[in-house]
Length: 279
Ligand SMILES: [Ca+2]
Image 1 (tube, rainbow, N blue to C red):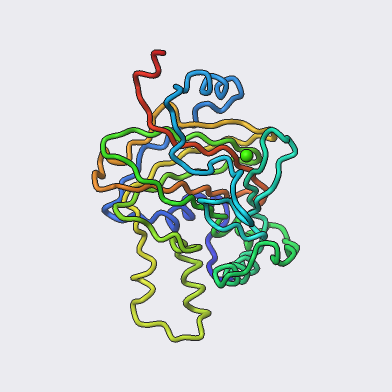
Image 2: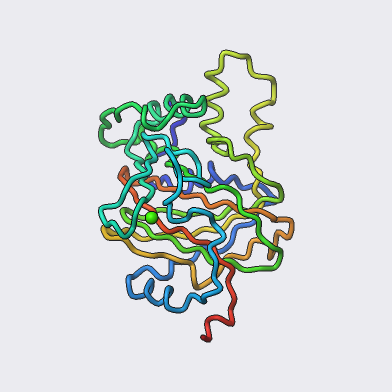
């Protein structure tokens, strides 16, 4: 195992790993999710103005060849592009955190080298208490492409989810971020560096692993065995309020504990106009 973090509650340690507490980073207050019921989600759709355009391409995961367009490559072991049992929903993203970290790291190395998700190995059995799985360590990370945003504007993130609770991050960058598979995953990149046949240059790791985002906001979903729509309606995201240099954002879907299967669909990022609330 590459990195052993203490077991439950893993969340904050993992988040510190994923989102280091650099001085220039500012975290928005974490709020309880809004719209976490079917009735609330219905209200969302009824009140969303016609001019609301999804800034996130392929948020419904319908486009792509072997992986959703405009999103990270799925790997066929921890992330999957599947057809939902409801034909109306079409294709969705499936994430599995009940995978041994050692197997995932080895396969991710192959994916980075160009392997296809269809050639992924069968998942190895995992054993209780499963602290050596991605659920107990890295979590499963899945990034959108970067999206340009405009200074001073507010944004509303909405997502359909099924399965245990998961976290969705909106990360803000002053420059276009590196979309290379796993580029922002420190532990994974350290593994790659350590397993490389080439000797690592001194300090290279530190150069690589500095996270490039300067702002982050979070949306939590609550567990549900049925599809539900979640949004952080009570407080839209304001990427440039305290960090005016933010020009791009990425959505990061990030499930970890418990070891389980999670489903995501219809991720939307729209400009938020307070006046629309009155219509
Ligand atoms: Ca879909």
